[in-house]
Amino acid sequence: MKPTEDAMLKMLITAVEHIFSNLENVMNCIIQYEQQKEDEEKRMIRPTVSRVVHYQSYGTPVEEDGKQVYPMACRAAVVTEVVPSNVEERCWVGLAVLNPEGLYFNRNIGYHDPEDGPVGGTWHWPEPAPFMEHKDEGFNPFTDGTVTGNEKPCEPIG
Image (cartoon, rainbow, N blue to C red; front, side, top):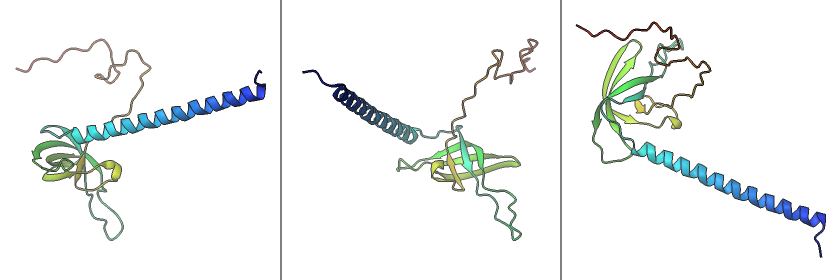
């Protein structure tokens, strides 16, 4: 006895639903694995002296007229010391913070994950730079795309 077209169509729909259900489960497992891997990598990366990190500044207090001279901002910083800690998640460092108007030096600055919102007086790893496509085949990121062919190597000092 041959199955009818309706029965075959139902079997096909059931098979496709089953495939998509399994595919969704596989994708969820991949996403979960990638998230765990990323979390492990964040925990494993330890700061070392001379590494570039970001410092979250406090900002200046809001004045009576409602103005704030310097709002909270993320600043470039260089690790100057790593404070030994027995707690894996806590990583205290000394930083040289590069502000637009000068340098700021401080010790015992704690780590804070920026995904939890900014917290003044903490450091975090720089966010990944966005991917940029360059359509100009002659683009050279070291010369900012202004390749003239007349560039000369740096002259030695002295």
